[in-house]
Amino acid sequence: MTVKSEKLMALSSAIETFVTDGCHLSIGGFTVNRNPMGAVYEIIRQGRKKIHLYAHSNGQGVDELVGAGCVEKIEIAYAGNGRFAPTCIRFKRAVQNRSILVEDYSNYQMTLRFQAGAMGIPFLPTRSSLGTDIINKWGFSKKIRQEDPRIPDEKLIVGENPFKGWTDTKALVFVPAINPDVTIIHVQQADEHGTARIQGLTMADVEQAKAAKHLIVTCEELVSSDEMKSKPDTNQIPHFCVDAVVHLPWGAYPTACYNNYDYDPIFFNDYKIFASDDTLYQNYLDKFIHGTKNHQEFLDLIGGKRLQNIKADPRTGYAINLDRK
Figure 1 (cartoon, rainbow, N blue to C red):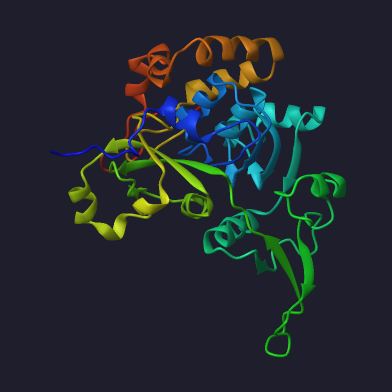
Figure 2 (spheres, rainbow, N blue to C red):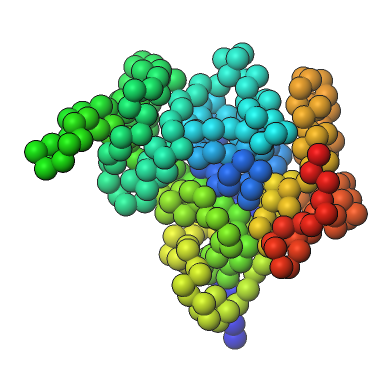
């Protein structure tokens, strides 16, 4: 008799189990690419609050978690949806209203911080941000740092290169590791034990996944372990890193998932209007998120014709003839 893996879970159960109020959460994806949006919407439906959020250079996922009032603090390099929102709209408003606290790093620094967490070391050195205000401007005060043991005592430390006699580099920036309570990523393929495969650019997802205490993987396609073993060199996430596997087709929508579907420009143009007005945004949440029981109902509300228009061409991995305006 074949026993189903205990890691294979419904999305609602995975979020309920691992994402709690006040947890330190990391989400994968880059701007309008492979955000774990189905999981983001479920976090909003379940009403999670006071999340300490980490992201590399995310877009829609960050904006909706912030806009829905789920986030208290965030550490990030960039939050934007390309030309649709060069800076994410609800994120920007929350920063201006001081309803969230933000600590910003460079893109490279955020990758290094997740990498340090994945390696099990407290920091990594870099020259990134020397001579910039990233070093001088801190989002979390000394008091906040003292009150929360999960936040490093220092945003970063500029120190001397211990090998300065061997190289001309004099100063280095030491950035602290990130070890989230849970990371959520969306991938193209996974098996029920958690082995996962990302097609195309991996962004910082692999480092984020390996840095976390718990990892939720949502996937477009749930495949057999034999299939994953047939091309082991294309698998980036080993099964022992994963706590929950959720089969969730269109789980990155409205962002893109390479080889499966493109981003939806109609959605992003509409969202820009909703997000720019507090009342319209609340109406959006009430209709599309709180008004749907799960991700499938959300997709049904969008409509099959819209989804068909953004399906990826097998040759290029992107939608062809898509009006991206």
